Image (tube, rainbow, N blue to C red):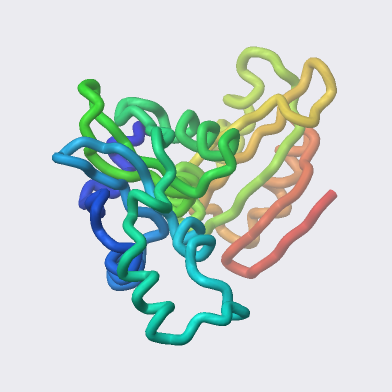
Length: 225
C-alpha cells in the first residue's frame, strides 16, 4: 500500500508571511493538525497546532487583550514554523511512512513527488485507515490468532481448513515478533462460517497450530487461551 493512494491530496497550505492568527484560523476552519509552509510555490517549512500553542501568549501574561491581539497579528508563520521539514516520498509504502513518523515522533508530514514538489500530506489518521483496510476489521467477522510453526505451507493448512467450513478470508497477516525461534504468529480474519460449526472448526485448527485467541464480532465474544 503506497502513500500516494492513502495521503490527503487536497493540501491546505499557508504562506511564510501569513500571520500566526491567519494560520490558526485556517487550521481551525479546515480541521487539520498541520500546515505546509510555502514560499513562492516551494515548500520551506511546516507549522503544527503544537507550534501555534507554544507560540501563543500564556494565560498568565500581564499583557492587555488588545496587546495580545496585536502580538498575534504581528507574529508571522516564519517566526514559529519548523524549517527543513521531514517529508515522505509519494512512492513510499504506508509502513515506511509509519516508521518515519514514529522515529521522528511526529503526527504527520508533507508528501513530495520525485521532483520534491508538494503533492499531499500523510498523518497518523491516514495510517489508521490503512490499518483498518489491511486487517479487514470493517468486515467484522471472526479473527483467529495462532502461534504456528514457521515452515512452508503452515499458513495454507489453516486457511484450507477454514475454507472447508465455508469460510471466506478477509485478511491473513503474520509476524515474527514475540515468538520462539521456529515459529510465527498468524492472524486470520474470516466470515461465512455457520455459528453452530465454529466449535468443530476451532477444534480442527487447534490440531495444526496453537490457538492464541478468538474474537467474534458478531457476538462480541473474545476468548484468550
